[in-house]
Length: 291
Image 1 (cartoon, helix red, strand yellow):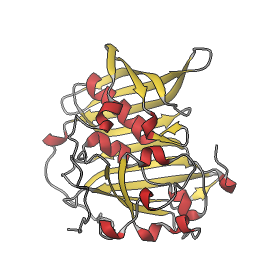
Image 2: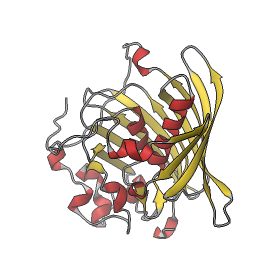
Image 3: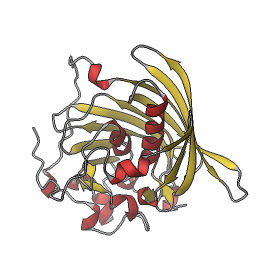
Image 4: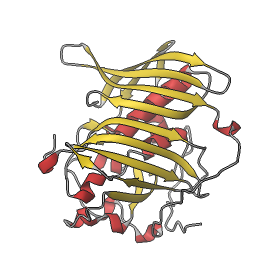
């Protein structure tokens, strides 16, 4: 089992009583309709992080469906979300004994007071605790140095101006071999690996896994592209409930073409189990231009 040195020593928040839980909590207005104030604490530049948004919609569907754990959730990001009021509308597509399927959309308002759809998801939910223990896999946990040999946002300037808000809420320690971009010497490999947790010490659960797959710096940085890399589509598979302790996240990009790239992520827990996988399509701002 890998060594996880330098774990957080501050008083630990608990699941249900942490900043992440408070900032993803929705108020049910009526069946299938929820209100939320999207927190500015989870922004990158001025846009709300896609993983945080997925966790918000994930919690809405957990309330709307008879099953409480996301198994697979696919999201299309239609327009950039901003901090502030939002409405989530859910629809139950199908309910079964082991799986239930639903869809949800998040809306905000433009300057004329008209609703604008920001993100739409389709998801299947079940009970992670009911899954069998049989595992047959060729997947292996990523090799990441001990935590005290890795580096976090606090060890250097923010990679993108104004992007520190979400970083302040994460325990993120990046593998030095994927930090060439921070020194102006990107490796060209399209890889990012890190120890991951929430800064207040809250342990991971299925909803924070939805955040984890989209919380590391973009792999585009390591192939020489800077600036915002907005997500077009993101699909996450939750494989099991994570064990206590820090997570290890590995993200790779193999192909950038036509201004778009894919990111494949794996999330491993302290028990060396693959707890989440994802693939996303993202738009690369070629030439280093942000937006």
